[in-house]
Length: 322
Image 1 (tube, rainbow, N blue to C red):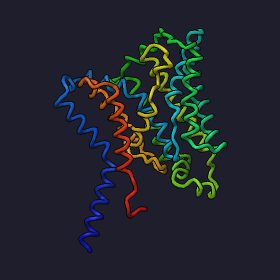
Image 2 (cartoon, rainbow, N blue to C red):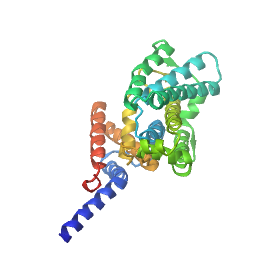
Image 3 (cartoon, rainbow, N blue to C red):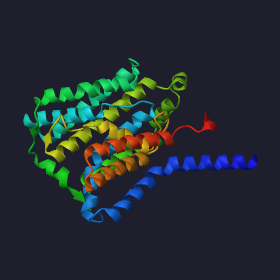
Image 4 (tube, helix red, strand yellow):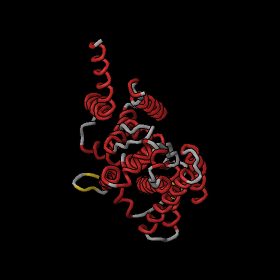
C-alpha cells in the first residue's frame, strides 16, 4: 500500500512539473529540431525575423491571459485589431498626425474592451457569448470604416516600426517585452492583480468578500481591448496597409493557445506571464518551422488545435484534487 501511495505521489509530482515547465521544454526541443533539420536556421537574420513577427501575438496574448485569469475568454481580439487598423487608416488618410492616429486606434480598442466588460460584468452575459458577438460584428465594422477595401498607408514612421532595432533587437519586440513586464507587475504586485486572481479562483466568494468584481472585470476587458489595438497598429505598420479582412484573422486562436500552453488554466485564478510569452514564441516558431518545410497554413491551424487539446488535457485536475 505504501509503495502504491508513493508511486501515485511520484506521478502527481511529474504531472505538476510538466504543467509548470512543459512549454519551455517544448520550445527547447523545437529549437533543437530546427538547428538540425531547418537550413539557415542558425543565423542572426532568422532570430530577428522571429522577433519581428511574434510581438503582436505576445501583446494580444498578454491581454487574453488577464481575461482567462478571471475565468473568462475574449474572442473579439482579432476583430479589435481590425477595428484599430481601420481607425488608424481613417485618421491617417484624413490628414491626422501619426501620433494622433495611433492614439485614436488605441482608444477604439479601449472602447470595444469596455463594451465587452460591461456586457460581461453588468449584463452578466457569458464571456464567450459576449465577445463572440464582437468577433462577428467587429470585422464588419472595420470594413465599413475602410469602405470595404484595403487602404495602403505610406507613413515614414511605419518603416521605423518594421525595421527599427536597438542593439539588434527589433523595437516592436522591446515594446512587447516592456508590456509583458508591466502585466507581470500588475498581476503580482498590485491589489488589482490580487483581485483579478481572486475573481478567477472563486467569483462568488469575491462578491461576498466585498471585492469590486464588476469594476475589475470591466478594467480587465478594457486592457485586453487596448492591447489588441496596439497589436493591430503594429500589424498595420508591418503590412503597410489596413486590410480588415486579414489583420487579426484567427488571432484569438493563437492567443488562447499561447496562454493555455503557457500554463494559465482556463478555469481562472492563475496568470502565468512568462509562460504566455514563451507560448507565443513557441507558436510563432512552430508556424515558421512548418512554412520552412513547405507545410500549408491549414496544417499549422490543425497543429494549434491539437496543442490546445493537449494543453487542456495536461492541465486537467488530478483525481486527488477532485
